[in-house]
Length: 198
Image (cartoon, rainbow, N blue to C red; front, side):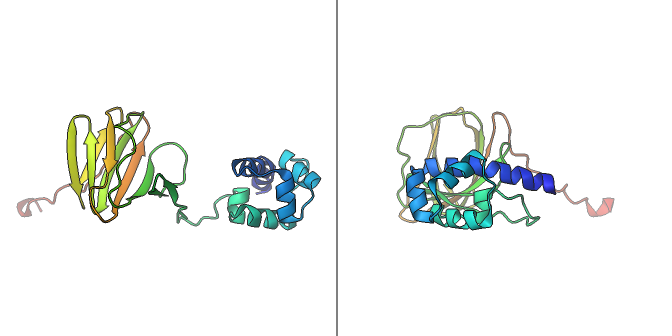
């Protein structure tokens, strides 16, 4: 347990620095927002100062992140995934998995009349998508397919592809992305035996 705690505390400094730099905030700006001196902030980020609750609470408030995210605390045994939506080019992605690598699951919400901003693209990996609601247009190579709620498509993402929403209402899709060559394996129960075999 103490090893886990030491690891968490040791990683807080670099995480604080990354968070500040991603937001384009200077140490002086952060000092003004939190009331923590520039020298203390600098020592925290470099790992020369051990983080305390009195220092972390104002930093979490200033960065507008939960305290557990700020310190990347280990999981407490709660199996629920607390999704934090990401919006890119008007499309909302809700991550449904939290482990790095391997298969990744997302709920994707395409706004009305959404069109992919670029021509078809290709990349490493494999994709499986299930339309939860609405309709989705899938351009896959030379194929132009409209999928409706309940329909599934899976494809190698080396094939050029683009996804859009042709309708005036949002479309919701469940996406599973796998690394190169990793496909979704669907298991089904064996068919029931004939009555005569029972």
